[in-house]
Image 1 (cartoon, rainbow, N blue to C red):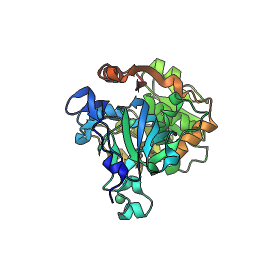
Image 2: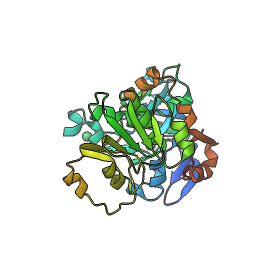
Image 3: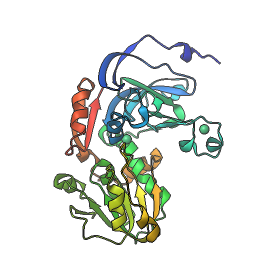
Amino acid sequence: MISILDLEKSSRMMRAVVWDRQLRFLSNYPVPGVQPGWARIRVKTAGICRTDLELTKGYLGFSGVLGHEFIGTVESCEDIRWIGKRVAGEINVACGHCSWCLKGQGRHCPGRTTLGIDRLDGCMADYCILPVSNLIEIPAGISDDRAVFIEPLSAACEILEQLSLNGSQRIVVLGDGRLGILCAWVLSTVVSDVTLIGHHPEKLALSAWNGINTTRDGKYYSGADVVVEATGSATGLAQAMTLCRPRGIIVLKSTIAVSAAVNLSPIVIHELTVLGSRCGRFHHGLTLMEEHPDMPLESLITNRFPIEGAPEAFHQAARNSAIKILLDL
Ligand SMILES: [Zn+2]
Ligand SMILES: [Zn+2]
C-alpha cells in the first residue's frame, strides 16, 4: 500500500551528525520520509551516551546518523492526534510478526533495528523517524532537560523489572558514569542500602541523593547481594565478582567494545548469577520521574552544544569528567 506520506519522501535537507568511520556534522543530509504507522519527529534536544562513543570506536559496525536519546515534537504522522505532541521514543523497532514479537517481546526480535545504533538513522539530526507505537508523550510538567533522560533512566528501571527486590538487599553499583548514577538512584527508590563505587569525587558528590552511600574505595567492601556493573570498562566484571556474596547476583549494564580475558571461575565457585540488562520501557522511566520530582536529573548535564558543535561535544563527552552532554537542534 502506498500512502501519501510515503510519496512525501522529500528532497528536503537537514542538519545531522553522521558516523561513517569518521564523525561528521552535515548540513545537507536528506530528511527521512514517513511510512504508514511511523512518525517524523522534529528533534529539539539529543543526548550523547556512552553507546554513541562506543559506536564511534566500531561497536556494531554502525554507520549513519547517530543518537538514540532525544526529546522532540511530532511533525508528520498518519494519525493526526500525534501531530504537535512533545515526545520521546523507545529505540528498538521490532518486525512485528516473528515469534518474539507475537509473544510481546519485540525488544528481543531478531530482526529489530535500533535508533542510531543498528540500521536505523538516529536522532542527532533535525528529524528522526520512529513507529508511532514507540512514542511516549511527555507530560507538560516535565521539562525537556529532565525528559531527555528518559532512555537511560528507563534502562536503569529495567533492573527493577528483572529482579524482585524486597528492600532488604545490600546493593553495590560499580561505576560513577551517568548510567551507574541513574541505576543507584533508581535502586534507592526501593532499597535503602545502596552503595555507589566510583573513581571521581565530583561525580560521586553529584550522585548523593536519597541516602545513597558513595565511596571511591570499594576494596574493603564485600558481600553485596546484588552488584550492578556499570563501569563501561572491561575490568568491571572482575571487580563485581569480588564484591558479590556467594549466590548473589551480578547485573551487567555495560556494553563495551573491548573484551578482556576474565577469569569466570568465581561465578562457578560462588554460584553467582550473572544477569544481562539492557533497555527499559519508557513508561517506567516516566513514572519514576513523576514520582520523584526531586531526583536531580538536570544536575547530570555537564554541558550543551548546538548541533554544529557535535565533534567538539563528542570530544568532551569522551572525557572522564563529563556526565551528560546535550546537543540542541
Ligand atoms: Zn544510550
Ligand atoms: Zn520480530
